[in-house]
Length: 329
View 1 (tube, rainbow, N blue to C red):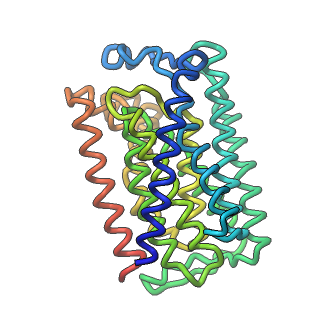
View 2: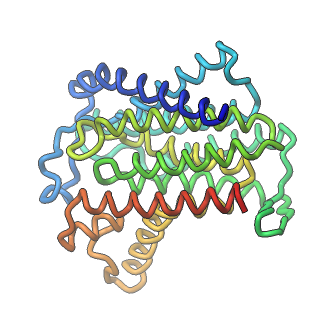
């Protein structure tokens, strides 16, 4: 019962702060951070032109503020693992903020180049790896539910870099419809909050669980403004941060395999994009009408809200399966 009470309190704190902060932030973002809709999407999304971006701050700042408050109140304890998660959360948010800022400044959809963005992601991931391994982590992929453990040696570092960078980009790719990435992230972080709480053998995971619960509440507060019709977009500020943070929690709690299940929709969207790119390069033809896949469904005539609801249902089923896989079995 205490776990349930703490979880509800953490979600409530995050939600209240995010809703209040959104009331302050959105009018300011309307003045300085209007998004220009891509020319490829103007027919379907012309009414969204001028919607403010950088909305990720609506769940990033409340999550950090609430976590700091809980630390000072002694409700959660500071640990190296919690520090790593917060570092990843803020660092990738900062990288996304730079990208969004350049897009706004240039008044088009060109921010950081793909190389610059990837380089920034890799630098942050390398710092994460250095801190994580310095804390005594072993280069082992441990899937205890499946009954196997693999000592990856030096390859473990490459594996962690790939997971962090791929995850941040996967959420970024999925963030294309009102409420889509935000809603999927609520389910994913809720799943990993419960998984973290049940990873007691690892230092600081209960505190990471509280952080995840606070983030879930903040995301729900953000969705008040981001569901159709969206009053604000999360931008790269939010999407890069969410993907990398989700991966960092999975790595720290030793649930990298479970992460594949939780992030199933994000991974699917990314794979679709890769298939399209490979097909265009080698066969000079499209497999899908448009990528990511949610835009393919739009081209087929699906309503945006129906696509979001379908993906939410799939994300919920995957998250529930991951909780059973990662906690119960």
